[in-house]
Image (cartoon, rainbow, N blue to C red; front, side):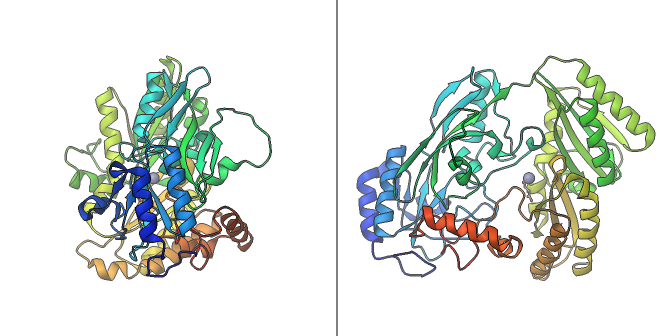
Length: 486
Ligand code: 2HG
Ligand code: ZN
């Protein structure tokens, strides 16, 4: 009995809830409205769902039992991590015919193998806890996001999170060695290998990374660690725009021997909004500039020369007019305050009012051309819209966001969202880019996926979904386009 978009609970729901209660006991089941409430609304407040049960298994075996019950009775399951998704991927639908499966009680670091540069973490570990476990072994788990204190590693892998260090270390997918996954019918793939080399057929691990819980539930992961950086230098540089930023990135990568770890771009308005709305944030310079770059370079060596290389490159850039002003952080406190400025931009934009967001990527070399074309297209539709295009320029990922006009009506502005999305996404496509660089598809971008993915790709995705979840119980109505995976 596939659970489709019907608004009626499947006939097996009451029995499923009763059986799950017996398996998990009271500590693993939330049913009171006040307890369930935090699981019903997504991080951005775009969706409000309903559910009769939030099941929180404490072990892989319990996840397996819950899924076996749901599979048998045709009850849909919505996996839920730290609830920091931007696309509503972890929120149940309004009709209340799905149970939520929260991984928060699976929080053990099962193993740290310093010599193998790997660790095994359960899905409910916070990203910050994984980073801390690596650091305690004098290693580094380099995935880093603004939400690392609340997002969970299972969610990071299910959405293939990107974040602030992808330029140097890759995205979540590049940091996984193996996965333990519970399939729709409750069977467990025990793929927690910590090998770097294993050519024994199809790579099942990669199927589940970025699948947003539609193919299986990731319960634990074997993660690749890196040497801990011992020298870290952070610079904040004023530039004229994206052209200058891209040229500066190229120079810094060459001069430092590819030690650039982060390269984040902020237009002037992003600094203005954070200074206006986030207590304690100040403009690092004494006069305004059109745009800025927050750049970090690091190496696992103790290397006093790194700072010199950064300073020399910036001095030459200032001389040529490629950079307009620059500071290199003198202390940990200064470094942290620069990062606070950058990481507060989403919050500041939210406080400022309604916004229309795009999470896109194009080749780094195409960023200036893309941004010029997309800016013109947006301003044609919303002439007073305020462009807040910022982000991970080092890996070609721009959050091409538009804020409501100053003093303008949110309703009128948001009514233009479909036209703005269509225009921006068409330009992304022209520049060989992606309409979702790091936030995933979830519920929000299913229609856009249908428009922008090739038909053959969608066919293969559907075939995989059908093979792994023939009853369509895993996170229905997410990721695959409407009409596909119910
Ligand atoms: C970031 O890079 C996040 O700060 C959020 O991915 C982006 O709010 C956004 O659009
Ligand atoms: Zn981002």
